[in-house]
Length: 320
Image 1 (cartoon, rainbow, N blue to C red):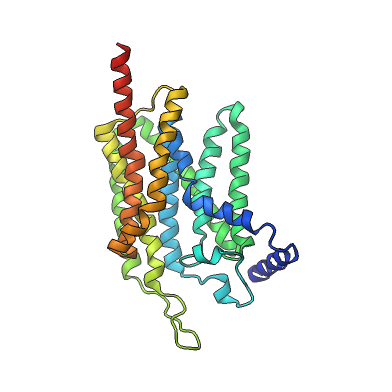
Image 2 (tube, rainbow, N blue to C red):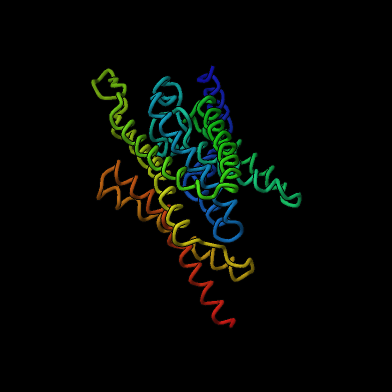
């Protein structure tokens, strides 16, 4: 049934001359490259609490998704059925196993988190609608491009929704018991390391093609798992640093603070585009992706918040 659905979409793509393929590729690519900038910008500029809620939900989701993906080791649709031909260049970014969808597991907690936080204000509820639509479009794009089955997408959305619910309850609990946050950060950090150990030493399918080549190399498939678990690890460490020493607070919301936060996205863009490759080349696929993930998280939650805090102090001194 799932393969037949992908073949139906494939026939539709061919019938319209791949007219929608570039758009679907853009939607998919944005989810795993620049979408993270949205909650980071919210964290820096508008609401630390809301930004932190979305980011926590995201890091938990991708970490869980990595463990689930490397537990079930489901092959990609075109490996299961040679009739499935992925569209455009999507096969190049379809790394790892198929189930659940990593792109959707990124979109669900971030777009979903924006939808949840926007719903509290009637004037912003239109953002909630857009957030839900973006989740569905991102998930559908993975089916449309032929790189994921419907169940891959559905389970990834479920992971994101469950993370949003769990983090909502956890944040409510920590509002009343802020001193307990260190315990949960420690649990998250240790859980990430246990996840690393698990995906490193568990068994993987070693199937070979007719010409004797390994169909899927588990070592390559683990790369993204190390990166995603590194994100959770980095988040727990960065949040500890902020709570213990930085105590970051967004600047007073005005045009100047918005510009300052927008400027902060430029180095983040540079890290996303130019830091991963050399770090991976230096440290290898596993540890390179993990270290890169930690670097990006530290910039978002430690380095630039320190810059914003310094700017706030300088501005306050000039005003005296």
